[in-house]
Image 1: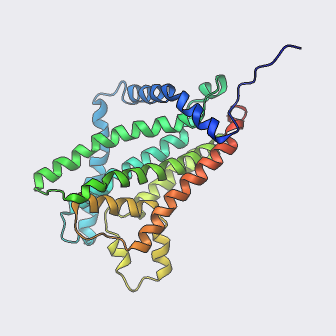
Image 2 (image 1 turned 180 degrees about the vertical axis):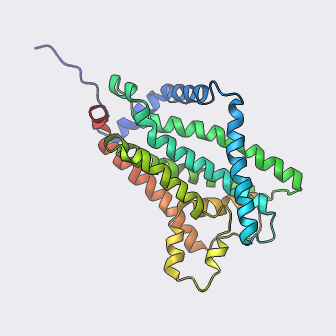
Image 3 (image 1 turned 60 degrees about the vertical axis):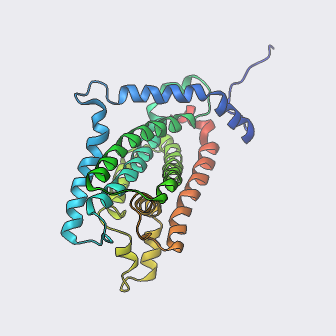
Length: 278
């Protein structure tokens, strides 16, 4: 019998990540493909990247003013904007990466490459939308006359934390979505729920500074990975008092770090069966 050539993912972790570097051209190609088709045949094109966060900002600024949430002396619309922009990045990256494998069935079943490239490419596209949405915040800060302090230099750390959390959950649910398509319908509902339990229309100080709330509720609230991200964004961009105590901040940040470890581990363990199950 002749020699057979089997094309499959490398089992050794080091070789797998070398493959990822080798196929980096595919990563950029998929990201560029998604950019070009995302707003194709739309009337206003990339303006949708600005309209979606703008609508969220208007609604949650209104809700925050109705309920009289604490602004710590800051402009309410700036507080909401500084929270909306990272939330949009997180939710879009989570949704898109979770559905990316199912959306690229033909590619997965025809050729070998590290499958993690697919969700990674969707996150790159979401980062582009995020960069555009920063223009909204920059415009508001210029209009209101707010000048950032040295804390803005730490903003990349919180952007990285946002991406880590979104990608971690996205890899986990993306792998589950290959086998159980129910997650394709359930996840948007969960993300929508997360919008209302994240500190967008309100500040985390509204939760942590209420003595009538049981400590267990505060710890449960801290399990939301966006608590650390949003309050970090506000602190970096707007200055003032950091809205989260250190212990709660560490809990919220740890959720994102655990998510990326669990997500990559589960994704790698199930990756070899994607072509058969999808």
